[in-house]
Image 1 (cartoon, rainbow, N blue to C red):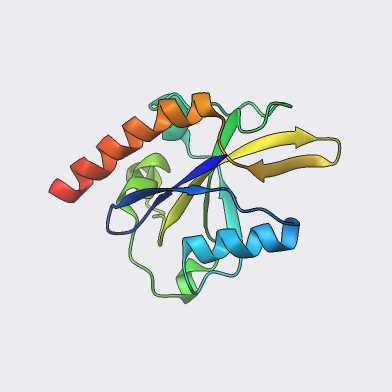
Image 2 (tube, one colour):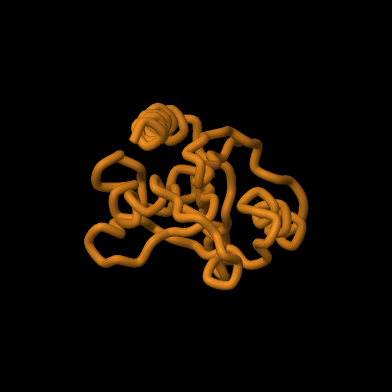
Length: 141
């Protein structure tokens, strides 16, 4: 299953969700966010759902809900602002930007709670073209 990465340079790329146990997956996700990232923060940005149509309803179908992962400790890492992430997070309304690279991942409800996973094909096919268009517009600014 896939995840989407958007960099501070407004480049978009697709990656396979990492395999392994929780620790291995979390380390791989942090590495995708950036070399200084050691702690991922889970964010559910309004515009990802309200404007792009992503699902924020966690269920038992892997990846049917999507969310954003960012560097929890971005203030300590002197990172650039992520324009697309900040747009999705509605920074223009509250002033708190998203710094560093972002990941758009899936979620699934398991017997033990909510786990991160790759995005369902439906969510990926819905969101990737819209995020690609946002990154293109951001590069043109």
